[in-house]
Image 1 (cartoon, rainbow, N blue to C red):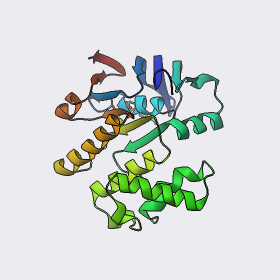
Image 2: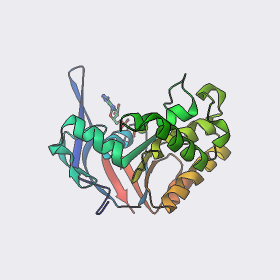
Image 3: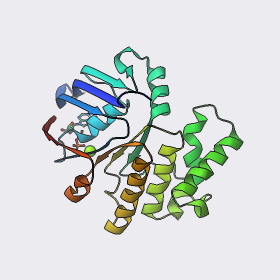
Image 4: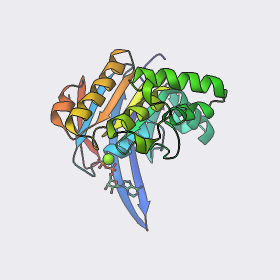
Length: 226
Ligand code: ADP
Ligand code: MG
């Protein structure tokens, strides 16, 4: 990809909930460069997850301009946006979001189903990525047979299997003990060193300080940027 991974220009997002409008983002401008490593901190409710959903094309801004991988989201149909998301973005969530009755390998292979990749190649590629995250010995385990750290590594493998240029990780270590969290973070950093842009939401200031850049969210705005 050429150019920045994402450009957000004065984006807002207002949720409508039971007739009340909730202004979750009130005008955020942010560029995530190719290969960037950006940490987002801020109190609960400050708009971090809402911003992550926009950066990843899971949601659209209420106003403002959002360009992902060179494509203006406002001009894309829902299927085109879904395709763009599948091509350039990987998501990692605090709660892993793995399919419970599905093996590690099939969880990881799932994004390739949407791409029309055949079963044999899906399994090969899923196996390769699970090997990369240190789980070659856990291919046929189901999520409940894995530790929290292993489940998060499966989720990272699933995010990677499509070869994304950007990983969005929303409190990926929030459900892990500190040693396991440190290992997951080291994995994300090694992927960043390999050229994948990483945007990481964290509560931990020391973790945030390791990123190349930091922003702090407050009340739906960027309070400061470094
Ligand atoms: P953070 O991730 O920083 O904790 P969020 O982006 O999840 O913050 O939420 C920002 C604000 O938007 C909060 O006030 C939250 O209650 C509200 N909010 C988030 N998602 C929704 C939704 N789907 N519907 C209505 N309000 C929402
Ligand atoms: Mg959140």
